[in-house]
Image 1 (tube, helix red, strand yellow):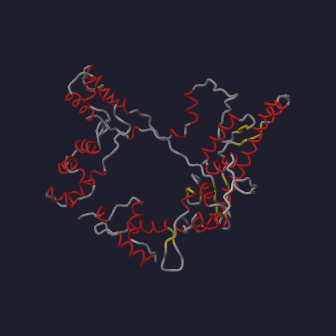
Image 2 (cartoon, helix red, strand yellow):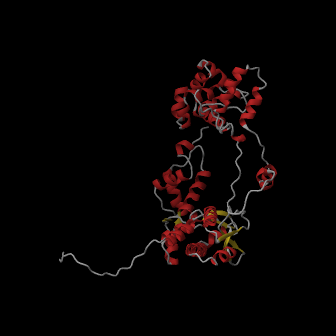
Image 3 (tube, one colour):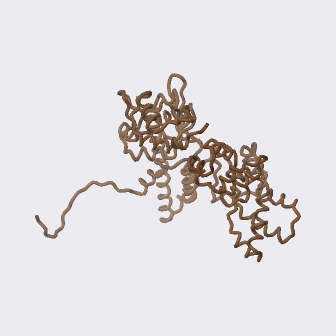
Length: 443
């Protein structure tokens, strides 16, 4: 081996991650909202990139300025759909109005107002009684009494410090007091929540069916007493791809109407290109190149998304014609191999993208499921197995619920699906279904 130092020429071929290539990859994985934000930021730094708003109202901060208008009227005009069926109420104002009906001294009212300020959006008291007592120079037991007064207000359960206290406050308000329920919640809450009812029945000397009745009663209570006062606006999902079936053929299109349209600011370019200044010329050249890179990246994004969507429809025709129950096993590798692109490209293309189908709107990534072995030559998807598990448990005998092993046997016998007990437990957890011992009801 020659270890002498020297100079040699060697020709190699390698891929360099340029800024433009990095930008194209980033645009592919952007959701519509992220892409809109990206284009708005680019429009600020690149005067040659001009946004033409369609359904999206955008603003050019270089020349647009907010006009003086009646903000309340404008807000009401823009958000009328969110106001349908809503009632605007503030929790603290509601509690203050109830306190006005009580004969309280100004000093007590100040303390109670401060206590109310420590109630969170769910209706729970999240402060420290001792600290508030020290702040107002009163005894801790007095502050505790003031908190109990708040806990007597509406809605029931308000001002509780934890879930156990919240449920107990609501139980005390019931027309027919249930002493067993109050005892279980206050003394054996952990055992009750873990559904260790046999152990609990022995400790209390009652039948499991009595504890089951307490459970049914607790299910009617509200674990978030202030939930009616939360003003959460509905979130609307705008699909990236629309798939239509007319009975004979599919129509697949990329829905980009929600995105702002970009155009080249020709007026700006003509105005400054006449300047005989090298720095101005260099600036215009850089921004022009940046604009065309963005245009090409957007075209490539749309093309890749269209190819992936078309291939998904080609491989999942039964889903789009018959429904979600007919989803077949498919991986990103299957799509990437048929399209001749990298698997990571497929992953970026479907990230946070949605498709509108005849059966609703779904995430594109939800079409990729693992393959499950069957006794026949055909395979099934993990989603179909989850649907089968849900159907079996939904129709089971609630007094003798199916164990995971029994579900394994029934899937094998009825559906020809071969899965392990561990797989059933995993899918059941993903579906939010409890184990058989915790699903059991007593009679």
